Picture 1 (cartoon, rainbow, N blue to C red):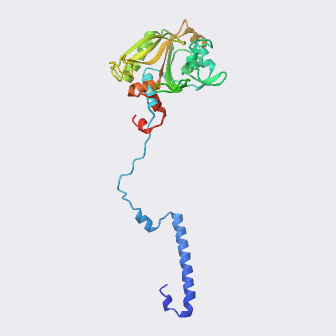
Picture 2 (spheres, rainbow, N blue to C red):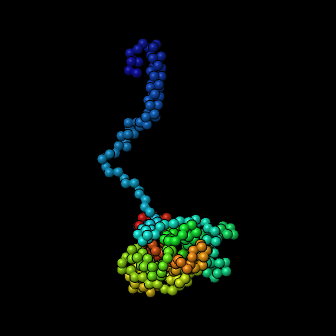
Picture 3 (cartoon, helix red, strand yellow):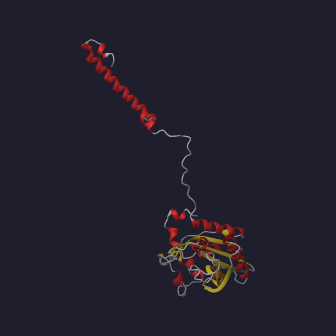
Length: 296
């Protein structure tokens, strides 16, 4: 461009057109290289300079849901007691959910367990006891399992109830199993999970699939058994149901009730978690609020 004034007047126009054409070619070639190499213009790089010696931003690391943590803790305790973990389908046959568990169609307690039907004899399971039946059908005693998983019941959602929740049920079948064995296993679990200072008591109850049956209470971990709104000022909170396996259940899986005895128990994972951490609303587990979940 600087040469143009030094050229004869009649040659300047053609020379200038050539120079401009060359500038366009060079600029196009440079833009193509920048695009291929992802190189930013120098002016933009200068505007975005940063100190590479500064510590980087830590990535967000997720963690297990508090209910998953509780299930893992429960599995760990019972693994130390010799129990295996078994799983079964959430969409279940009516036979496994009711009949095999000594709950015939005309049984008064059936309405408590009626759940969401998919068709006449297929439904969403209302307890993980169905897994116990499936395991006993395939395996002869001794049997020592826990069965964690989701269950469904037509409960109205409120601070203490949900139409979907998690359960862990346990089963032990062998020769000579007694109610004392049941009490001992539950005592070891409660002490391991809630702490050595927590007390346990059993109250007579009824379940179709166990006889005799009991409700198991622990001293309230919120008030240390002194009485508060969580335990209705009684100092005790119910955490699970248990009992000796009813002979009719053994009959359904072709076990010899004269030879074998066993016990079963079931607990709600949400209830266990709420008691341990002082949570007063079950709905908090399902709202996916990171302000709540990140505390665990």
